[in-house]
Length: 414
Image (cartoon, rainbow, N blue to C red; front, top):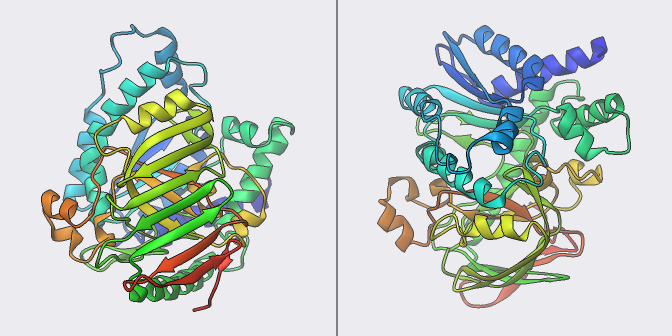
């Protein structure tokens, strides 16, 4: 790679530490990373963390090839086994006040052709062990962030017609552009971007729509919103008021649906990579908030297993709005990674809601949160359904409606 690439990679690492995590002096950092191809970026992040005053940085590596080897060779009755110490270590760090980072560059079709039932069993066990971590995420206990680093396997799936070297370089260029690394001062560029998203989420929170109505080819869906819902986007705040950006990149504003007030049908607009395989061209039909019918041209069994993870995996936990004319969308790249693809279109998430998207939600008991319309599940899986053909109407408390988005773009300014 060139010196220019190395400079951009260093800027990316600094952005992750300074903007994504906003790591504080004397705050430890816990990193989950994989595959081993992402090591150059991880090392730069570790250096930037120490330079920011971190007394200790801990890294746990996940080699995805070991996961594939397990599915190819392990006893069929052994897939409920799990190395619980990894999540126990992370949980201990979060409870101590450590920031944590997930840095991955996974192959979106790593487990293509593997036994779907075993993937479901392993995934459910993994989700159970991760649940205490996701509960901390739901209330923003500490700064956390999820970022991606291109790997050869990921690049090959995104650009299959290019040479391995060109594919990897092309994907890195796309990541740098998406994260504003190609701008003179990426940190300042992100400050401006966050400020713009802040205006939009404040505007939507003030509206207090009772529901959103989405229409597009294959989609006619009404998503009810609970009283006191809060729109978020851009940055988040810990209970101590420390700002951080959980997803780099991010273009969305989002809130929680009322889990029992979703009606109609939604069709996906992009493939979903889930548990190492793709789910494509799928449709979900909701009644009283729950998925009652579903189909997929590819990966239907994977979709079924996801919806059956637990009693509330088939309910929604997030609704997000993104205009079609975002920098990421205009690249025209199918990233096959939800972190990037979700920032190209309106999307929904099956599973748990973020408690901070409801007024008083972070202090509610599970029962109170559920009564207010919040969903609690082992999973939180974003899928894309927006496009340049989508209209969105905001339904007000009196039953009247107003245009919110037309042809994939905001119908009014901020």
